[in-house]
Image 1: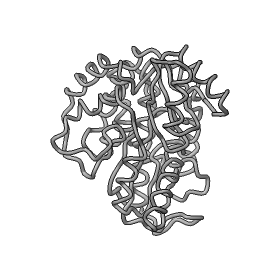
Image 2 (image 1 turned 90 degrees about the vertical axis):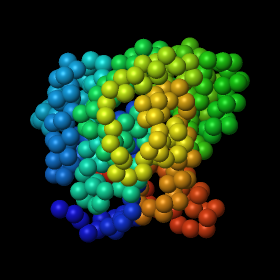
Image 3 (image 1 turned 30 degrees about the vertical axis):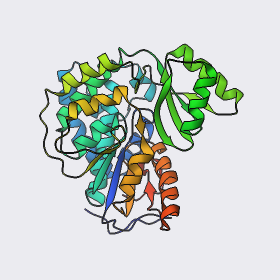
Image 4 (image 1 turned 135 degrees about the vertical axis):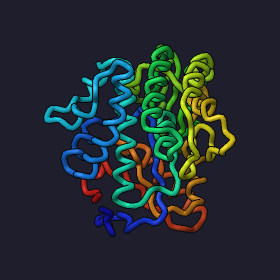
Length: 333
């Protein structure tokens, strides 16, 4: 059943044109997903439907089923998932994001475009119908196995990209690079753990907040070429269909084209940085009525608000509302 409106501050009223934003692995909360499942029948139905297909792949890959646990009386905690076999968390995140997307489609309309950031590109392509749910889950598991061989880590810095480059230079860490640019106040850097420790200390000395992400690998690093080749090879086994809507890539910095080698472009997420503001500015040109974060957190939505507010000021227009449904207690499905 579709709703005709959503009440509350800045909530959209039956948006005709929306954009769904798919985040990477750095902002995943199993708790918000479980709360939404218990509070909203539409979310529960979407989770049940999506994970029924994902769990077939989980069995194929030797992993425990996730759906019954997420929908059961005693769902797993984030800590429990983190200690589960490799691939469990990425498949849970993939399923959660896809379920939020489907619940939003039921409440409103399918999006006019989707945006994928890092790992979120797999989910964005699945949401757009390029990959089946099963093959999207397989791709998520393939990536997890590849990342397990990528030593290092990632650190979130509360500064601009330019300031991050200065911090890296001042810390003398030649092996650490900018991995993700979220907005003008938030950047993720990646590299060897000892170097990240030095970067974090330099950041503290400069009054910049530094937070090590709970991800035991490096990514978006130019030295991961071999890993990218392995991932691309695995992706070539999965058939692809034409996209139902435009798919924007924060790594490619544009909308995917029909002639793109998607296996190579997805593998680029291992070796090239993701620059979120660039694709958000392109999406703003579509004049969406609203943007929704199809994930369990709100970090990507927060970045989108900052970026689009700045774009709107330059254009002399109003920025569209941006929502993170699972992180907003008053969100009406």
